Length: 201
Image (cartoon, rainbow, N blue to C red; front, side):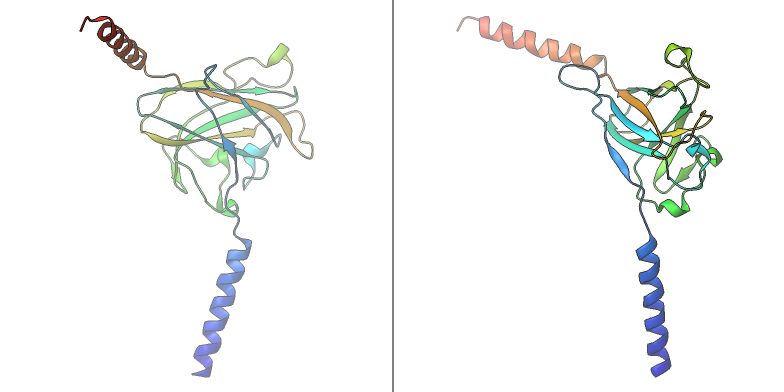
């Protein structure tokens, strides 16, 4: 009986120790894709110059946004330091996976699922960097979103000229325009309301 108790205590201690070192992936925040006075509100962050090849999420930024199935998402990352060569990845879903088990981003492929995320798209050099300064290009892509729900954008550095402590800065914008039929529906509702107001009683 005493042996069983000791084994139980040891097992609980191991579980507690594992939990103490488990650190879920941290999201920098959520992105406003359709602001009241414009299409999107950009966000900024800092990433490691070569964090695309890291074995965990150190130096990698995670952001979330919500959208409807069938909407198009326009994702753009702009370096704010010419030494950064950024890359952007888009996943469906969000994750609380432990950072210690997250693989290199470079090991992932389109359609692969991990920790509640499914990789939908990635891009590195679609646009020239500002003033054509620095390595590579900046990410930009458009994708039709498959499901209604929350999405994750990951930003990392891939072939940068530097990897300073604290990372290198970037700006991220995600625009998700309203479906083309919705403004027409709203216009129709407004016209109907106007005609009803003008109809004689």
